[in-house]
Image: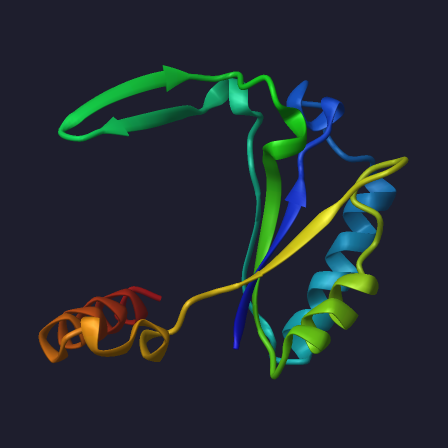
Length: 141
């Protein structure tokens, strides 16, 4: 099972305030633990929403909205993609994470869809296309 583990943004992360050396060191050690356990697939921090954009879809129309975005609590400041046996295991890993900000913070855990989750609507042709894409991505590593 794959899970996206998302660090929620804070007012400081949205202002571009970088983490202190101590937190960077603690996060590095935590990431090393994830790697050694063989569960880490990806991990990245994200720039403030002021450097981002959203694309709103309405039928065929596309509207671009430049950041920053007002609702900080709905934004993501960083993420891990992990592969574990269960949601409970994902939770246990997240509980071991250093607090990502000096005060209160929140980390959200969401399971990633797998091909079998889509049922018969995910046709053999679509599955083959998905497998080709994943093979291409893997060959670029």
